[in-house]
Length: 381
Image (cartoon, rainbow, N blue to C red; front, side):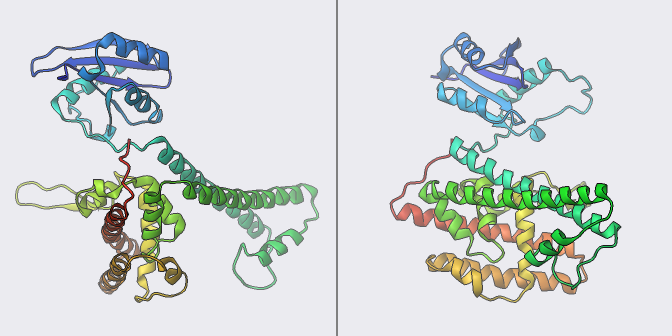
């Protein structure tokens, strides 16, 4: 059945503004008002609008997540979640209301001017939630450690022997620190307890992540194992990449993945002038962080030993060959840019951008191998 209505939803925590655009260039665009953001209200709205096959619905990605998308697709309605930063905006438009936003979504959706985002299924979204919970725990741990170390610094307390901080020996020394003032001692005990709580929290989340990965489909497990063939990409980095990106073959070319990560240069060119600036940072910040961290490993000369050798054991020669090419190319790139006296941040960013190309190559190769082995790839919801 041909689509007759394009529906734009401006979603908020408690309400949804609804607008529809009739098919055809000159079709009417009208507002249908505001409904409560409740499942029963969504069902009532869809029944009112007509047969589900005649509808195409869109709304902007935001803090309300994909619950609305999952409900609509379960009802058989075609739904797109669109990137809010890529919705066309008129330069002179200074009036913003929920009604106008819904009308604009419906109008632009009919014109094909909106960019849908990838929507994971609920199992994949659950893995991503757990990955991001661990990331938040790591940030909390860093803050807790800073509070304690700066507390010791303010009061002139130093470990008796120089060594790395936050080792078992360092924590043993911290437990033995005493202050004469009860209030100061109580503050130190609280800071130290928070550091230990953060460490236990991370350990628990990593154990839960191991269990979650073991329960994922075979293609996801193969992707995580394959990505670990790359230098600098250990298990947590590989899980983060898999959780944030899903199937990487949805990117036709590595350059698209680089743009999605926000690691490409911004550009303002006009006439015969070309001007490029810093990276756009418009993509997935979680992906960008782990890839930039991994890029630091390519300052070292190519080698396969230690943990990397263990991670590559059992992988196909095609995957390990891609990883070996990555080591040579990215190390050469790192040295070349460093020799030109480029700032370390720019060097690492440039290497990270090229590393994404090898991440894409490994993922596509793994997907081919899984398909050839007779494990059909599941399409993302």
